[in-house]
Image (cartoon, rainbow, N blue to C red):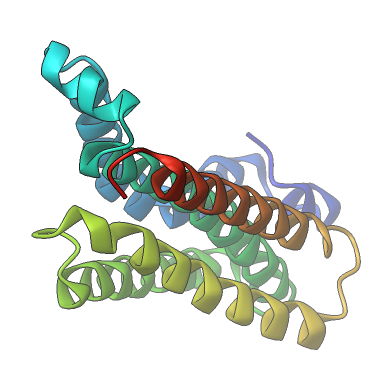
Length: 192
């Protein structure tokens, strides 16, 4: 529960839990928007026998299920990048400002991120059409990755620079392989 930079700066222990909680607010959009996606994946996977027959035949439901699983992965990637972005910002702000000012800034940045994520998901139409959920989360991850790189380069912090980008690269590779396999299965299935 102790942010490393707060311990290194010798801040009073009473600030540690508040800094930790405010930094954790950065993953609130992923919980808020990701849990319904996981529920939909669960209900699709436990649907009646006709749903499984369609999934095995490479029908539209299989494509939707794969896209929703990949959207959940990208949602987790967004949470990972958002957490490390807030961690980087928290380090910079604790060096320059008081702990209370840093807490206010962390809460404000998390609120802006939540509103931005909500706007992108609503504006893209992914709440009405689940097939748009994957591109929306990829766009959010792209925006967060760009912000993280800009913050990270300006802060000259080398502690955790490559980790979020490795996660993003792994998710990109997994998405590409899954979509290519799905495309191959759909092309090879009889009737196409």
